[in-house]
Length: 349
Ligand SMILES: *[C@@H]1O[C@H](CO)[C@@H](O)[C@H](O)[C@H]1NC(C)=O
Ligand SMILES: *[C@@H]1O[C@H](CO)[C@@H](O)[C@H](O)[C@H]1NC(C)=O
Ligand SMILES: *[C@@H]1O[C@H](CO)[C@@H](O)[C@H](O)[C@H]1NC(C)=O
Ligand SMILES: *[C@@H]1O[C@H](CO)[C@@H](O)[C@H](O)[C@H]1NC(C)=O
Ligand SMILES: *[C@@H]1O[C@H](CO)[C@@H](O)[C@H](O)[C@H]1NC(C)=O
Image (tube, rainbow, N blue to C red; front, top):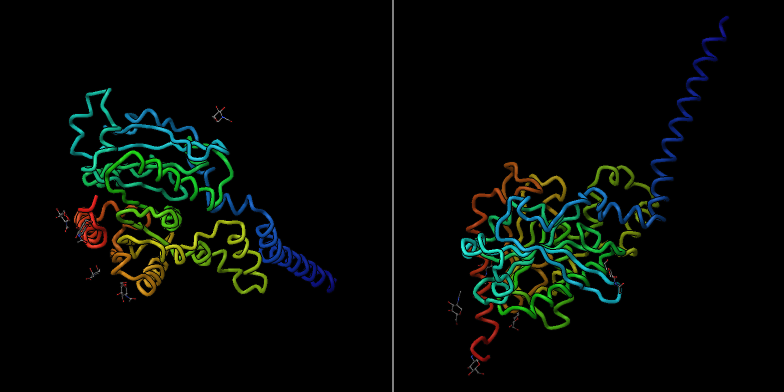
């Protein structure tokens, strides 16, 4: 009679212990090992294309409430047959001529040196149709080319790695450059800041230098971002943490080490970040900024400006709401033109 409840209690304890052990094994052993060996899991976390709307019809630009936007495609990799979908968003100064003219000559605007171009590279959860509010701000100063990476939107779905995406965008950039006399700026958001920075670094090897680079909510490296995630923090004390969770990201080519590539950016840079960004904590932008300040020569490579906005709800996605943004962009364009005047002899050609 006396033994029974105790046995029961013991049984319950054993049961709880077994459950905890199982939980421990799953969280601290099985998940890290599965993560380490599954490139596809890593890819689907860094590039969650599965979470973006696969059925979007980008050619029906009016359905997005847009005017003066052309949908087009560029084959950036002939060997692998990779074609990227893009939008060409006219600057607002020519909009009134374009809206009622279905034969409007977009190519002529693209070629025109009077209309600065900005290439927009979205974040890993975005599409070229995700930043309509920002485009409304940007088109006051630029014509915008917004591009979907391979695997996103209606771009060709071929193997996504950092190197492949960057090679695609390098080729897209050169395609634009061959068609225009206008200045070309690059704007990256979130993961797009990693793509932008690496792309510009690779373009430098071919003597191609853009006029300016804007990094909206950038980070230092992808592994730094991962280390801020609560689950990764939870297991960060494990001896096998680095080899299972971080190193595979680097050797499988998802690392986006912007702290390295930013040193090759030979044009003025502007960083925009908000203190209440919970997806990419702003100290990672500060780390990138400090690396650039310390190691770039701003006389020969261009200045770097860092706008850190107060915690007032802008977060990771709403920087377009910042009231000073238009002024900040105008000023940056001036800085870039000024730098160009100082470093290139434009009167020669
Ligand atoms: C390239 O891809 C397009 C569309 O996906 C397809 O129609 C075409 O046949 C492909 N070309 C080659 C050479 O594979
Ligand atoms: C930056 O480059 C200029 C021109 O080459 C040089 O005079 C200057 O000393 C460099 N500044 C630094 C901090 O290295
Ligand atoms: C570089 O940018 C900083 C911050 O905007 C500014 O204070 C500084 O005067 C600039 N330096 C040059 C040489 O333009
Ligand atoms: C740059 O040079 C051009 C022509 O030489 C001049 O019109 C323009 O005002 C200059 N811009 C700046 C910002 O110094
Ligand atoms: C620019 O190039 C032209 C022609 O080569 C030369 O005459 C001029 O002095 C140069 N200007 C500057 C500021 O280097």
